Image 1 (cartoon, rainbow, N blue to C red):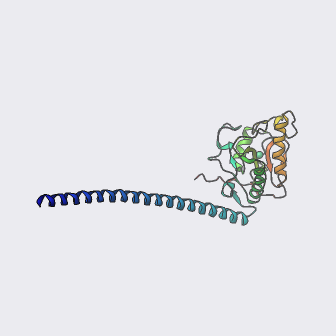
Image 2: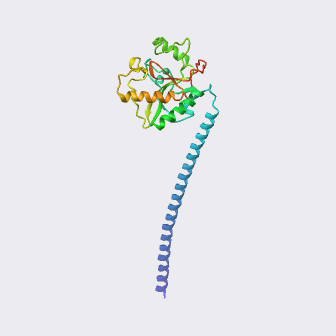
Image 3: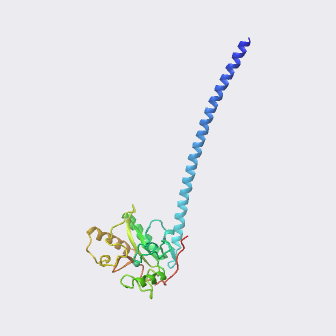
Length: 250
Ligand SMILES: [Zn+2]
């Protein structure tokens, strides 16, 4: 009789133990499944938040553009992320051989910013984007440049102030959407005949590249100057005042 009781108790213990084992295993599976669901949920939430943020940024930019004053200075980066930047005067890679800006930024008058965004959208359709070398330039920097290189063919006399000082000129090139530079034949701030629009000593491809840039900018109201393929004024009918503020680098 005792033997039977022991066997029953043992049997019960084994089966209970097995039941417990299965239960733990199942519990682990449930926990794992819940963790997966949470993870997926978090990913969706993050994605949704990101999408909402992107929509919000676009909406803010659209509103800013709609209400942008023609004369107001604006950092074009705040209106569009479709441009590339290589602000040479924030580096020693320029004809002054030293940085004269604390950081690279492209400030420009509101009306010019709108025209640049429109021109850039056209370039995008052709597989390019605008790359900025220089935009608004403080008058004090113009004075430094004139001291080093007083040649009115390439540097404007600070007495009258340049179109850059008025926030209505940009120095630009094009790059492919991959970030690869478009060959314009001569480098930015190359003060020689090769930088003139009239120079024809380059390959057809280079001449075509310059033509794409020029036509794209002229279509949106910009004007060239004879000696520099990279320089565009906008628009001569606006006579903005010379400015001398330095932008914040925070
Ligand atoms: Zn220029």
